[in-house]
Image (cartoon, rainbow, N blue to C red; front, side, top):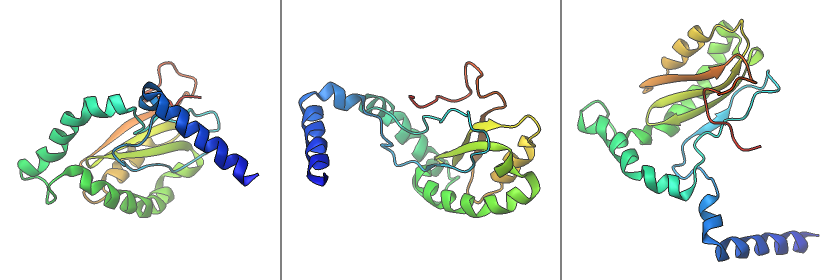
Length: 170
């Protein structure tokens, strides 16, 4: 059985290699931006696309990404030379901070949320219950060390069109 799975995986790779256009359409987290789910209380919440992008999207955005990353250092607002270098540290700090935020906001019980971190920004994506105190949650999340901004991409209606974030493909 294992060799059959390996054979199928090999065939898939060969197929993709023979069709570069197909390989270009594969989405991946090319910038290694932290992206993780923190709650699952609203079952019908569409999963965000997050930082997944095609090769073409990555190449198209490369110059802008470099410019955005370096600007805070050039302006003297960052201790590191690129604001994307903060994201892994912020992701760890956010994980610790979330437990204390839950005591005040009960976000685990009232949301299905994903966090995406890019250049010291936290994008909060997903669904919240109508009674959820989103302002307090976002404000508390913004107190995490080195966070420059928290961006609210949430909805209280999982069936809303359009959603405030791009959903992943079904």
